[in-house]
Length: 482
Figure (cartoon, rainbow, N blue to C red):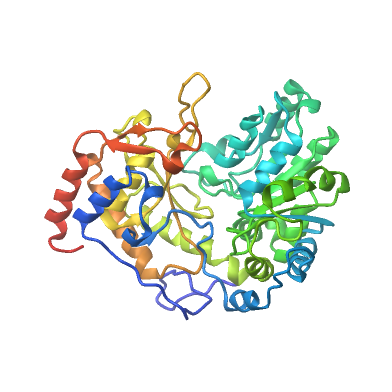
């Protein structure tokens, strides 16, 4: 899609859709927002959505569906086995990815569980460009270990590197030599590395990674959950791919992969997931887990209505005008924050705008969870719900040691086709105000700490009365404004 330029010279992303259905929002007074945050244990996951104005927690399952997706849901086949809906979805997945076999699952982490059960044994090592919380949890649950091999530039919050999600090939060679190919059941590549700012990898890097892996007999597992953003970045940033269509780039990426899995809560704007492959051996190895843990082989725990919407959504993902809005809105938000001095991850990636909490709250020790503290402060300041992506999202070592995350980020997701420009500018305004008053923000301590995936349902408390001071400063500066 060619860039649309405004005569005024102002650069704005242009929505390539119109709004036809709306949902009422609620903006609580700042005092009520503080109370809601306390009731949620200072964990944005535990907030009630009715208390949230802008929900930037995630882009998983909260993207707006198209009219074609909603219409497709009305023709779903409810048959338990052999549903025509399944075969339409299977055909679309195999068409786009160039695969022969498809296993449906209720979402991406179900796919990760099946992959871990089928391939990973105690002591195995799984190299990847960077881990995702659930992918790592499933691997460690069955006794495996993750090694992150992203290029050094990927761990620099501010950079001009266009593909910060690339695997470092020298690190991968060393990893294989040190651990032995026989102890590496697969290499996982995540399109749009979630925990380091939604940063993409290049087609060139994936091709080289796959070549090296296959020389050692190691399969490539491709997590395509954030594929749409990665496709857009390859199309616009990788010179060799500028004349390729989105479908051609998709096929070129997937030709390097032995197993492809995805969460349709992200890819396809529906709610479900699946695993695709060409190997009958891999298909048979994983097939039994579907009826055991998901559902029958032709629905995999998904609603058939969602499967119909997914089929259309996957097809729409091949349209550059559809997949461009996310990256363009995220870049716009990041640039507006940069203008106001707020530290964000650059270049802007996919999924959302990522604020560098370690730099934003440089006075807070990593063990006091600055990204989580910033998430609570942003909610109190504006009713905007973001998500911590840092040390709190890690898990403790078996001896109780807490590893410090490579990056300490507040993720402000921008679900596709959901927010208006004025809402994005409102969020920018409140975050900018908070940055000017950042010294008021303090850290957090756990009061209830789950052993696994603690960021989902752990409860914390502020260290000191900094939240009361923040509310008082808000009233001083904004008067009776909400």
